[in-house]
Image (cartoon, rainbow, N blue to C red):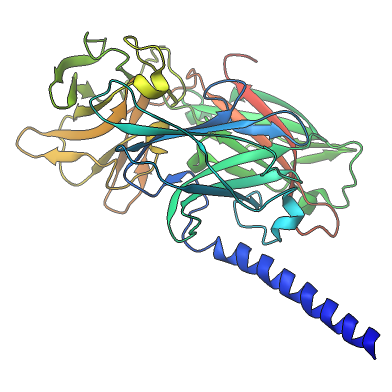
Length: 429
């Protein structure tokens, strides 16, 4: 009788543990968008990358010494309690809905303890940093992960989210960039043909077990998911159909350089320094022209720099940056947005330009930390359709990075693994 009671207690205890873990997973779904987002207006200058190189794609190898670095500022002089956790997702960024014990080696959440106050700046801020995997948070399996930062341990008070990738390399990727198969697009588009070799892996059905995702310049809105190979040759999958992985080349990004707030750089018209820093940029115009003109850019990225300081993380100041764009025949029928990695390419009220019907120009201002910023203009029509090329141009010669990610769902598995990664650049073939 006692053994039966003990077994019953053990069963109830196990059920309660599973319920708590399930509640943790379900609770984390509510307030978060499964993309790179900032939820609090006072949070600025979020950077997240492989710690070996500033601005690098946030991918690390499973069970390695690789680490990711997250940095961000909060305007003001008060420190706050920020917690974080990570969640496993599939190739399309749907939650895997598995318990944290299946994808975490250690604790389910931790606290950000590394912070410093700004020094000698007009705009006061607190600079936060987080490096992981660490002793408290480390992934157990490969795949897509979402980093979630929230305040005071409250999932209903989100601060920011960042996507990152953990790869357990088991598949080899060979790729090349070729002109589009569509003759009318050969001057504008960049087509990616690639092969995935999965020798050594148990793949019962390549059409359902393996999916490959491509992105241009790590931008989620450019992602193309390949679920069916064009040809299967032994343990090699070839993706070369004429209708897939054909990307508009776009144009090199525009840039603004605020490393110095004392001297005007190339694109700056005026700098005002008083109770706040204000930077007026030279007027921009549409670049929808026939000929391609090379200009060096950072593929949408940004870097914090301060020529007058010694540690830009805490002594780079903030400035209100004023953009203005002239478009011949501009009307209020179309909306225009300013986007870059500095605002996660999000098309919302915080990136939308104001239209001045009298001057026929668009205006926009935003608070940015000193540094070098890439940006571009996006036109959106009344239906909400985004047009990335009308104001910027579109050229096959444009220098771009492409990220190729290979996902594998083993037979009987409840989640997708990331088994291959390849970075491809149009100028390094």
